[in-house]
Length: 143
View 1 (cartoon, rainbow, N blue to C red):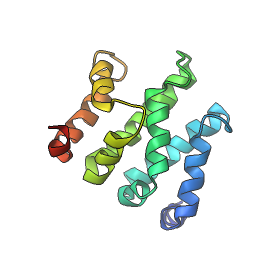
View 2 (view 1 turned 60 degrees about the horizontal axis):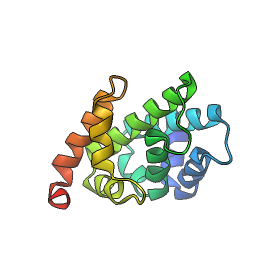
View 3 (view 1 turned 135 degrees about the vertical axis):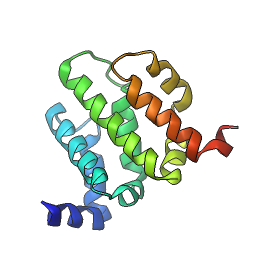
């Protein structure tokens, strides 16, 4: 498993394929959930910089976490949102560049959306962790 994780993070092509799987249009919910878990595990293994070099991954994770495209309350959708949020929090915690990518993602007013999510019991911890990382790493851009 460790060798496989190292191979995945060393090859941007493989990481970009993971981002494609996260795309709403072509993948099943179960496959998207497993892919988000794999990316989260890669980040927990210390591969944050490699993952952050593929902006499409951050974009797809934000789509899954903020889930504008398909708001639903099913357990599977909530689990995918939770995993995507955890991954974003890991990526933001370790890298100012990743925070800037999240802030620059078109179509979202990220700070405002996180502030709204803090009011939700389910996503309060993840949203507050993301807001903290944004304040630590991207303070000049927030001004």
